[in-house]
Image (cartoon, rainbow, N blue to C red; front, top):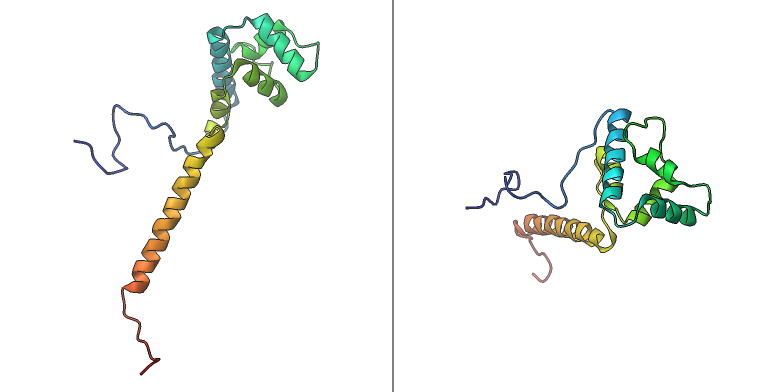
Length: 152
């Protein structure tokens, strides 16, 4: 039997939008490893080869100087001294279609990325919470009689 208690965890179901807490200390080495590993995995899983991805990134960036070698360095966990800029990261995500990389990038800060209309879920939940708060206030106000002095 399923419990209705929101604090009780389900061993078999992971929430689609998990709650996150910010990590207090930034660990640059761990962050680099996580991002580069995820970027490398997205390249392995993508239909385009690295030359095509680098060429498409160069087109998006309006630059002829972006190469497969640069892409390899940005995606290699062993290349600690090659950090991808935010603009190049954005082009990488666009070309590969791996929007989940944005979520990974902000997860240590307790943030979660929502795409497009998914933000309506959060807005619906916020309004439902506000509605419950107003309903509680109304219940409290209705709980004691209001003496009417007019018309006596």
